Length: 340
Image (cartoon, rainbow, N blue to C red; front, side, top):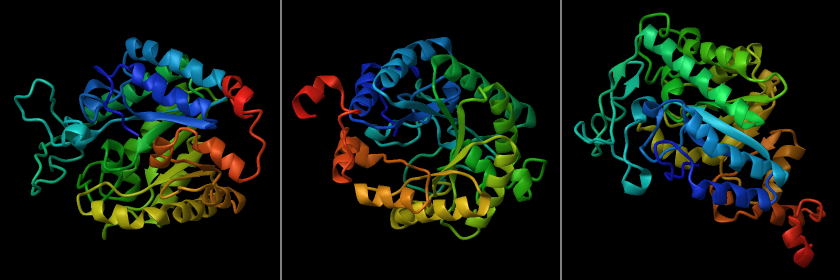
């Protein structure tokens, strides 16, 4: 979950406390927020980045802390595409004016803005050339190398919520007529090539994940069947697990996401059944029994929580107690003396 607390992409004390408290709270896998592969790949000027050694240096002590308290450390790398150059959500989220020194030019599969008719300002993106696509792919590779050196156990390539890779994948946005558009395989080319290049530099014994909007929730967009095919292509390229989210490609999906979030865990189960791949489930998972049911019935291999975990950094420990699990072995010794 974006924290809008980075300075030029560099993690702050907030990230140590924010992520570290979840490790102390018994969380198994802690996924760092959407982290940009370049300055222009950020959503906002307050978003996290991993394109330079200074970013790796800021993240290393955080990852070490997570490991020291028993958590698996994951990071999500991304390019915001046409949704970038925005004010932080804390400041309204509109795109920054062209003359704003904190803004930058945005990019996409075409020159269509995210919401040209909306009340908020959305910049007109620059349609990427093939050479520019290759440059961004190398930025993903660079971020993957830095993440490996920092010590992350899991790397996730973000292809959801209308950001760059998803905007190429979905027919709602990708209207190109070259080798990167026109049919599902071409629309998936940017993603598949990027994943191949990332897999080549990401250690074989560490997990590679891809986050997908498994359904666009808008007529004419990606369906679960489309995503299953993409999942099989990703499996061929060495992806270990799929993170199953939804929506975000176009403004019309906004309302649908709110209405259909609770469907996403079931969609994850369907995607697992059709691809044979492990999956992570997200969406309206707020209690221990629901989380346990998803894993116990094999709908999901990992359950991810965002907002609920932000409400309570000790959610995992409370869930364990609810499910009758002895928490003494996962409770930090500083707490265990009193409450173990």
